[in-house]
Amino acid sequence: MDLKTKIGGVIFKNPIWTASGTFGTGEEFRDFLNLDEIGAIVTKTVTLKAREGNAPPRIVETASGLLNSIGLENKGIGAFKKEDYSCLKKLQTKVIISIAGETKEEFEKCAALVADKNFPHAIELNLSCPNVIHPEAKHSLIAQDASLTEEMVKIVKKSAKCPVIAKLAPNVTDIAEIARGAENGGADAVSLVNTYMGLAVDVQSMKPVLGNRVGGLSGPAIKPLALKAVWDVYGKVKIPIIGIGGIMTGLDAVEFMLAGASAVEIGTANFTDPVIYKTILKEFKEYLKRKNIKSAKELVGKLR
Amino acid sequence: MKKTERKKIIKGTISSNRAVRPDHFELTMEAPWLSKVSRAGQFVMVKLSDKFTDPLLRIPLAVHSKNAGGISLMYKVVGSGTKILSEQKKGTVLDVVGPLGNGFNDEPILKKKGRVAIIVAGGHGIIPLYLLAKGFREKNIEVKVFIGAGTKEHVLLEKKLKKTGASVQVATDNGTLGHKGSVVALAEEYLKKEKGEKAASRDIKHYTYACGPRVMLNALSKKLKKLNEPAEFSLDAYMACGIGACKGCAIKTVSGYKLVCKDGPVFDMRSIVF
Image 1: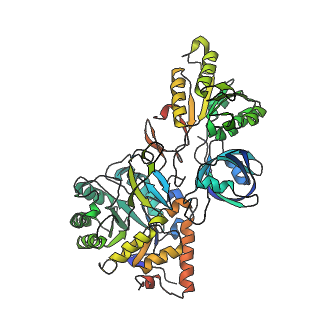
Image 2 (image 1 turned 180 degrees about the vertical axis):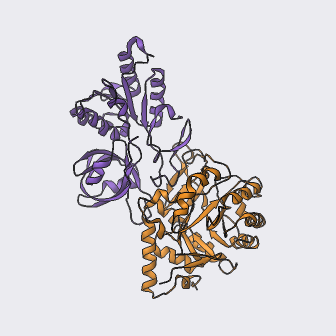
Image 3 (image 1 turned 90 degrees about the vertical axis):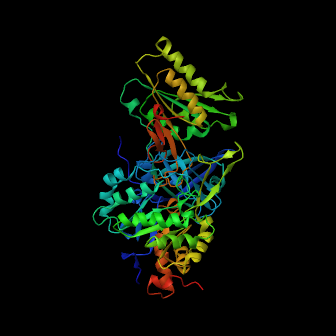
């Protein structure tokens, strides 16, 4: 059985990855998983300077979902490189560093600093965090504007020495148009979707539950929506799509690949069970075996 | 700093799960390793559903007590997760991740002869503190417990604590049990009397451990600071993973946001920004 998938010239051992912000740097899961089995680890988004994150409460569970407003808490690229790169480099799997910024300049500088010899294996551009403010964006998110998305990707591509994946927001009229913007900017792939903007209300205090008032919704609640986004983009761009949104089982991963994803990222599921990655990969392999599918690639876009 | 054990997923059989108050349950499960390694103030993340719907996430519960073969968890039924847990029968296998977080630091008491442990709890805040009190009593250390609750029905563990030899005082809002009024006032009154004229003296005889609603802890911290008393508080927060990955359970401290799951749940009182 061939699980390998090639994106931007990089060969990944399998198409099932862990999503940014849900897996730390992987270290948090070392007690539970063999990290080397993972197709790729996408690290928690890092920014040029440290960010302290949003005011608590930062998370609340909603029906089949998780609403969060973490606010990209991170120590900044400098400290991240110093403290975490040596561990990340030792992993026998691919590491994708997720980066974000408030301005073009921050994206550009951060992307330049990320590179360190042949590391990382790819960069994921978080153009779609609903919990930070982008002063240059017409809308609240970069990935709500196709031309700004194109420009950001172009800027990062200039200094990046590895493939660049643009992570897109679902809160848009036409996600295919944004994906085309990323492709025009030179993105090697698009990953979709980031969280859906949401609100949770505390009737007792008559206030929003989250400290930042609104947040991003993830988990099984958004799976059908995310599948539709992948389906909408598939065929509209030539670059591969990485599917994200409420994947809890191996069959969920299959669904995303059938809808057009070349790889998938596991997010909220990691919180429900620190060993869920292992279960998902096992179920995915079992499906291929049962259906007598020789290569995972055969699934991509097979949905009719 | 004590060495923190590696975290594991433990699947243990429930040996009992019964109501100890109309809405509070105590569950004991077989988990010899957890019983051996977990400390007072640490917690576990309990899995409640395989369907990933309601609830989606695990719930954090403090280790309430331990015996040779396992641990016990005590919880109040407040939502769908704890409701499901209360319906689990003896013999069912429970899936928990633990031990998580840093527990209470018992060194300030153990390292200094003649120190008295003061324990102040609001509502079910007494649940993790029981194990701490019991540990101190086993070493023959004097323990003064102050429990606050809305009414008599909500007072937990009073008898169980008395059995350890700890002295226990209760305050209820409506006066149906013990002192009528706030547990903070009760603890303050005791400490003031103990310290007498030397209210701000450097000779510290007491060390306080507390857990309860944020407003109660805030009020308590003001009083303890005024009395120049050292203390540590156990906090809770909405939590998704329990292992430091989601960064959801942040609380404000004097050195920025800290995570309840990884940096806590026990924090030095003076580091907490209320």
